[in-house]
Length: 310
Image 1 (spheres, rainbow, N blue to C red):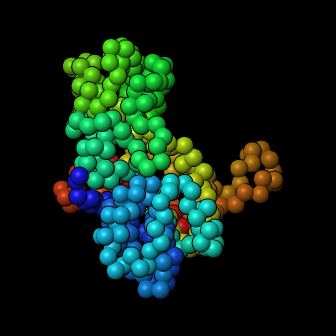
Image 2 (tube, rainbow, N blue to C red):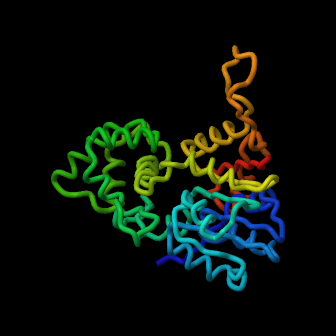
């Protein structure tokens, strides 16, 4: 078992973006290694932090990391998309800030038995929450049809050779089920045309399987929209994404919340009644500095978007 080490991405930028008030109520929807949560908790006096994660191992490790600061924190084991339900349970109507760090933690990648990494041989799992069962990546690889796998790899992995990889997977699993990350990675590497290898050939397929296994994009737009509406006026929301699919959804949602009136331009008077709900703090996403990238290469694809509730 790996130690739960996680270098928080864009740490300084997130804490500045949230503009933490000592008496405020904040939500960390994706607790992970607890790095951002610790920074928020350190800035609270009478305030509270609701810290949520789908991975029970993350919650246990974060409690240890936070130490005495954990007294300021309410821990929730669930998908962050359900956080508004928990706010209702706690009797919390509005909050001062929300953070979503949508990446996989370093611990999850580095712990071989979790099955997230194409660099380490392990059972092909990839579930964030292993306590509640559900499909694992091996179930998807061994039971989805060739057409379903092709669509998955194209849409969630943006993989050029999706059809060929899916076809080779289906052919291979007839002889023997594909049960480990090593078996799948080796198959993908063998499938890839030699001249097209840019980075590791398995990277995009593993991303697609992880997204599908955990339903990462399902309901993301609706969840962000709902959470934004639980902010107090002047409250901030920070969202960190790590691939274009997530970022596109976040960007589209924020843009829709920002605009006034969606009536046809030929209509002389607004009849839709839509008003702008937020303002964008940064028009373009904030990315990691060169200094941060030297310390944490996994911050390379991170994009941070910050909004403020009107």
